[in-house]
Image (cartoon, rainbow, N blue to C red; front, side, top):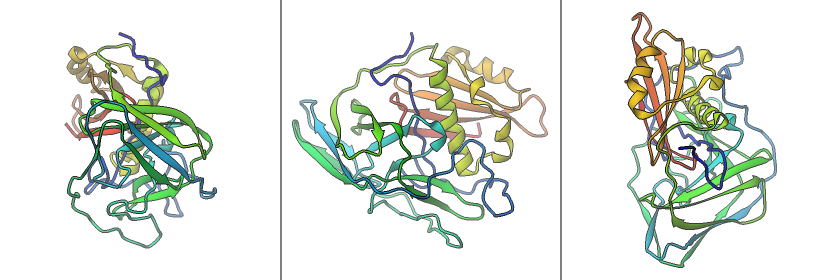
Length: 302
C-alpha cells in the first residue's frame, strides 16, 4: 500500500541528548578539525543570526473526548517540528522552562540530569490551549568531551511540519507552513487514521527519514567515524517479513540504510559491519511517528 496523507512526503524529526526521546549516555565522539569543531557529515550548520518572530501555537480539542498532552519536558513538549530540509536535524520549540536546559557554550559543561517526572496537561472537549512561542527552535548535540547541550536559533526560511498528538497518539494534528511566521500555528486535534503497513514508500520520503536518522547519530556521536560510508539515496524499503534476510545480506556493505513500515510507526535502520568480525553486522534503529516529526524510541547496537 502506498503511503500518502494531506501533508505529502513524510519528514522525520529526530531528537538527541537528554530530551523528549531519552538521555544519551557515554558515546563515541566525532573526529574534529583544527578549530575543535566536529566534522560535518549530514548535519547542516545552524544560522547564527536572525530576528525572533514571536507567535502563538494554538491547540484545539476537536475530539469530543478528554485528552492529555505530554508536558514532561516543557509546557510545549507535545509540539514537534520537522523542517523539509532534513539536514537541519533535531528540532523542537525553544522554551524558557525547558527541563535541564543547557545551551552549548565554549569551555562549559552541562549537568547530567535524571529523567524528569512525567507530567500531563488535560484538555476538555472543545477546550483551546495557547502557547506563547518566541519563534526560535533548538537542536541538541553532544560536544567532544562534553555532555549533551542545545543550540537555539531562528529558523532559516523554508517549509516545516508542526504536529501534536495526545499521550495515546490516537488524536493528532499537523500543519505544513512557512517559517519564520507571525501567523498563529493552529492545530486541531482529531482521531488519527494514518497507517503504513507495507512498501513501497516514495524515494524522497525514505531519503529524508534516513537523513534525519544519520543526523541524529552524528549529533549524538554514535559511530561517527564510519557514517561517511552511508548515502541516503541508497535507502531501501523493506517489509517486516523480509527484514532479517535483508540485514544478514547487508553484512558485507560498509553501510546499509533500510526503512520498514510498521503500521502505526516507521522504523529506520542503519546497518554497519562489526569491525574485525567479517560477515557480522550491527544495527541502529530509530522508530518514527507517521507524521515524521518525532522519534518515538531508539534501539542501537543489536
